[in-house]
Amino acid sequence: MIKIIIVDDHILFSQALRGLVDDFKDLEVIGQFKNGKELQEYFVKGAIKPDIVLMDVQMPIVNGIEATNWLKKKHPKIKVLALTMNDDETTILKMLRAGAKGYLLKDIHPSVLHKAIKRTHKKGYYYTEQVSDTLLHADEIETKTFKSVELRPRELELLKYTTKEMTYREIAKKMCLSPKTVDGYREKLFSKLDVKSRIGLVLYAVKEGLVEEE
Image (cartoon, rainbow, N blue to C red):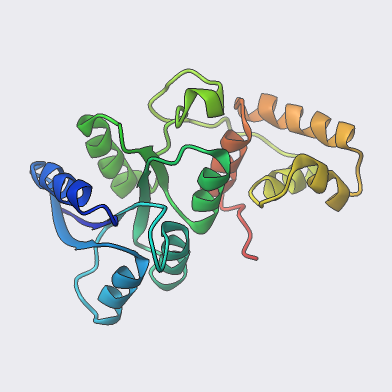
C-alpha cells in the first residue's frame, strides 16, 4: 500500500482528491494539510511517514516550493509530486530544483495521476513531457527516456546552470562566453539529449543528480 499525504489549501479540491486517491486499492491517504507549515508540524510530531506527497505550489504561510525543499533536506526518501494549476516555466523550474520528482497539472485524468504515483514510488520520478503545449512545444508522451550520452565539460557546466534561475544571457556572462556561443552549446545539448526545451534539460539534470545546492 502506497501511503499518500495531500497538501493543498483549496479544501474542496483536497477532499475530492482524497476520495479519488482512496478509491485506488493500492493507495491510502494518511493525511491532508492546507500548507507547508502544517506538513512540517506533522513530521515534527514523528507521525507515520508517507511514500508520496501530492503538493500544491501556491499556498499561504509556507508554499509548495519551500515545503518541497524542506522535505528534500529533512526527509529525502519521501517523494514529492507537484499537483497544481501553474504551468509557467519559472514555477516548474523552481519546483524541480526544490526536489519535486514530478510535475502534474490538476486537469489530468485520474488514471494519469494513479500511474504517476505508482511510477514515482517505483522508479523515483514521473515526468510528462507535455506539462503545457505552449511551454514545451512538444508532443505528449508518457515519460521521457533520455539517451546515454557523454557530455563535454562546457556542456555539463551549461546544463547545471540551466537549473538555476538565470537567463541564457546571464549564464553566458557567468561562463565568460558570448550569448551566441552559449546558444550553440544549448543546441548541442538539445540534440544529444533529444529534448526540445529548457525543461527537458532540467529534467535530465534532476534525474542525473546534477542539480547543485545553493
